[in-house]
Image 1 (cartoon, protein in one colour):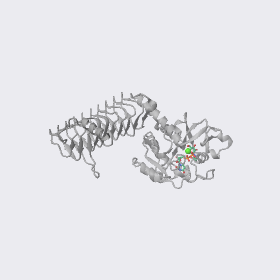
Image 2: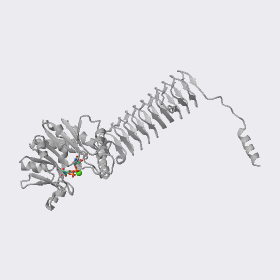
Image 3: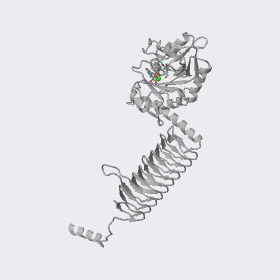
Image 4: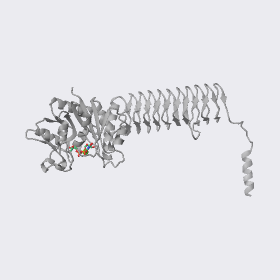
Length: 465
Ligand code: UD1
Ligand code: CA
């Protein structure tokens, strides 16, 4: 098997996005646009992957720090697609094999289509193989021009095409396989005598034809995978396609989506069988949900690991957290980053967790703020409990050991520890550690003033008269 070298072009400036952010870094179903391309290409296990950057090169490079095997070459200024590929010469000059040329803004291209392109290229022993398709309205694309024998003789760009050539419906997708041998010599020989004064990669085709090198094509039945993104309208259209495809795959895998049209599930999310997802649920980023879970309407989970048999009731927001098996969350709970909800634990309505561990079977069922807390197993946290974790300068830890009972309306002034099995009376302000097995109370003895209300009403009446 010959080696594959992937080159992705992403140097061009995109004006139609009207964005300060480079186009290829915009989000499409939880991945950056460019990452869709990189994922499809990486599955081919190429020997090298090179990204040609130019416009906002530093931003692109920084955003892709998570792709250590990716090499970057800078194209400045941007003098056309032929000139862009030429920039990869430094990476590829001593290599052998096939170059697969991709665009950073064509995100739907699948690994299997790329594989077919490579197979066609190898099978036909071509010097170049072009991925093409037929479009009812080919306006704007380069057209595939064939000779009397049906061989591809050149590609003509929209602006350079004759009236006759404008009628050709077979278009150049801009995706190709090239033999590395002789490729850079041919690129060095490109001229820029065309309507845009650019070095057109497409001119290689005419050069190869004249040199009697074989140029082949793979014609796709549908143009769907070849669609590029140039504007936010196209980004939204493409997102809808990716989302529908993801939902379908999940349903086929045994997940019930009560309303697929309002299930917003990112590309990298996994969901186990027999899990049911209600309407208007968003599962984002690297979220994984186990089997037999229920996620009710209006909840949003971002980068969350959810175990099996978990119930998440309506309108919860959960980010960068871990939820154990059989836990129950919500409705209206807010679980913030670095929180761990243990197996069978309960987090009820209007409870907020931040950087907090809630142990196995522990319950915080109503109205609480638990921040920077380490809460053991079998703990009961009463309604209105607040960890006072911030002293205005630093954050401090609250520790609640196994089996402790925290009465309602308690303030825990951190750093503080509630020992194993201890009780904290309702309305207590806990400033000092509570030993294991102790009861802590801080409120004074209750005093009742008999007849106070009637006295007050009488005094008010007397004043008015
Ligand atoms: C190109 C093809 C055209 C094809 C179309 C498919 C050429 C000359 N034309 O046209 O035949 O039908 O794609 O979409 O190749 N880029 C760079 N550096 C540059 C110029 C472009 O990196 O100097 C990158 C862009 O970021 C983009 C890609 O190359 O990802 C395509 O560039 P674009 O200007 O959109 O090419 P088209 O004119 O659409
Ligand atoms: Ca384009």
